[in-house]
Image 1 (tube, one colour):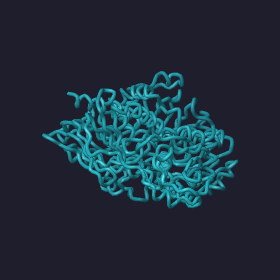
Image 2 (cartoon, helix red, strand yellow):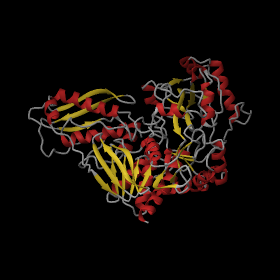
Image 3 (cartoon, one colour):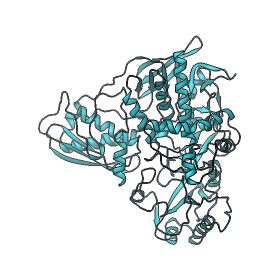
Length: 615
């Protein structure tokens, strides 16, 4: 199955329309979208029927948009060559194409969180319309109206529609609550959408088949020690005790995991569960399907910025929000769950609180961020603080070694997994590739220009056309100029300007460790079931830099996900889960523990918020 077929199959149900958009949608992006007939078409006769195309530059790569016109209507929009991120740009393309087809108009709003992708679609369709002589008619036609009310009543209001928030919403609904979710972006899924989807849990059924010795106690110790003993023990214990139940809960919603567990970058163990289909977007699609199947229980409101928590008689009683910057909306609910994610994309705020492990590093615009910029701004922390909650651990900011130079996004060849080496610009290994993320990033900053190359070969990519775990192919990475290929080690060194002798020595040293012939000088521990010697070409290299990835500090909570004040007492009616909370990961989060956190504490928050509302 090629990448685009995989992308099409994955993206066909990616974007769940909430209360913002009207109508049923039709078609499949990869094969052209067939428009519904407009209820009151304003198109004039005489358009030049045919299929026209426009070349646009998307967020991730250039692609071609094809639009088919009859003599009076748009009949199909094909964006199947796009390389936009699943659940983000790809969803925006599908959503806006559906709106244009249904309403036969160019008057559609960009999707917050995927603005560049939206603009590409809008401009591409307009260019095609000009070729067909349809622009004036399509510009005059009215676009969709927002079907948003000024007031909603619910048992539970969840602020944030990412992985933790949707988990809380579904868990609350399963506990019998009526739920309203408000999400400031026009897309669903937040940072979970663009994650690799690794979920750490001790899983004897899978691990024993792989010969992996593990235990919940070991998982706890690894998380506590990996966080430099700064995490809250009772929160860590809750996480490690209940993570496998989160795997099973996801499976009950239709998520399929791979039969074998792996190792996320910096996981410090082989207990990372990966979805069978690429990325954390898999979880979001399952959540969206549940919400779509339970419209009487969960209402999803997009483009909705929370502004204030309502407080009556010392208890949180709802949320004030603004839709698209102008319509004031109130959600009345006796229980509110904050699940707004971290603040990694808020450059000024992260600089303000950066007094911890990265105090000597300027976390300014020169350091990118893996998160969707409009999402990871930290507003939920300020909402909770204004209602009386305490914020803790804000200086605990995590960098990830898998950043793309210039953007900080995690793209192309990933650092997670096995069978790869990290080398500096000269071709020398400089770190244990299996170390904690802060250790990796400190080592990278010590290299020339604070950058490095990840080097892999046919062991990791036996086929250039087969999609990897993230839905990407070597073929497309090469076409976009994102990676370098060499048939031999010397060829790869020449193209990356490394010293060929040093690069070969790095590979040879790694291979000796894997073969058990030598102890690795950097402390890398080979796994005889997962690691293979790297001997044959073709070889591939991808340049990487550290990037802001996760903020471990946030709202103080207890094991029941109550938001706590400075005295340790619950703020009545207020719960929190996911990256907006503090105390779980200490000063360094292990790879694979974020999704485990979001799902485990999200389930907890939803269940407890529903119980509180019903009491």
